[in-house]
Length: 301
Length: 303
Image (cartoon, rainbow over all chains, first blue to last red; front, side, top):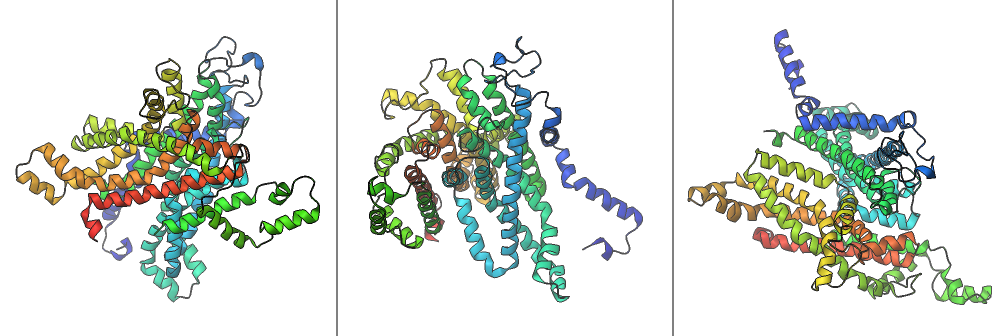
């Protein structure tokens, strides 16, 4: 029942309803949960830092200076490098900022592409009943398959590199988004306005875009955010194995792999990128749990 | 039901992998002194002029006869290479599951029983950290601070697990791999147990005067195990990913390390075989999980 159906509502009632709505808004519930609020704030800062990396990085992440090689954090040789230098004498602060930019960028592009395809599959499955079975079978197959194997297979066929990495991560994010999109679209399909839209003669395209997609996208977008943590972790693992980003690219996974030879003499070179990946993925997972709880009424009690 | 299309898909990928080999097999077979006519004749003999789908059919036939070709680098049969690496991988996964799953179930039960307390919060915080940590970081830290200190070996496999040397050498890889596995198991056990603890038969058991722990363990936990087994099954893929990284880091002579090595050195037949066996192994585990369900829930077997 909508508000318009209740003409007798006083202004005070309407204000009260609006207040309850605001109180229950998803983002407000999340802000009341301290760990989730901290995670959200942290991610805003991190994404900001990654976007602004070229402007805020103190040094060129690719400028090497062999005299500063493996300079430790706070070392006298490199007073300007707050987090020391790596095995090529490059500033770790700048490398990590650019590394975050690459790692997050790869994850975001992959989730947008894979999630977009997944959403298309899910919406089509919900709208065209005949396509439902075959499309969802395909999704089951993708879902049952370990995503790291996509990474291996695609690196084997297309060669290692950033492009293969993004393709593998995109494919890995298709199935879960397709399921979510289908679920969301199926509840919209039950709504009377779908019937009404068809009655006034709207075509399939218009119905899917204007009614289904525009009503489902908030849910889909939220689940794409949840997917990001996993995509980043997988991307970093593939890069660590040497199947994704290649040195000297500043990417956190490949930086971690690059530095592991120096673990015993300069542990910071490998540990800092690892810690950065951990914190970003942790923040996405904490926020994701809170979002899931906020969106799932069954768990709310 | 799901396995057949997946299997075909995997075989197709394996086949395509062999198509991208930069060298022409006919030229290789013919040798450097062959004329163009000879090469063409050999190409005809090998069936390389046939349409791709015919070649794919022949490829399937060869795979079912366990002929996966020869490694381009060692020139040994791919099947032999796989046979050497398969057991170490299985060993590593079992060594990981054997400590991580019981620990995860214990922690999850503890968290569910002490719901809302500091213990619950601490266990859940640990579990979300567990799923967020890159497995290679755990490995790097263990190699540095445990292996580097000379406490345990961290380079390669020193023998089968039942020998003392072999057992010692598997500890660090198994701990690394298990560290990312405890969290999801604990979490799933907690959620699932909280659901079953509210069920009617649990109330009945309580009414009969069964002790608190007896109710939890005998009545609720066994029923709560079904989602946990599902999760362990689903997470096998995740475990596979972890084991590829772990094997590579600890120079563990398993299939995952072989696959990564084959891909980075462009040894296409070997890469194809390794990916194939990883995928088939994964499907076999899923099948085993389905069988385990029937044991845990007799209703599934009858239905």
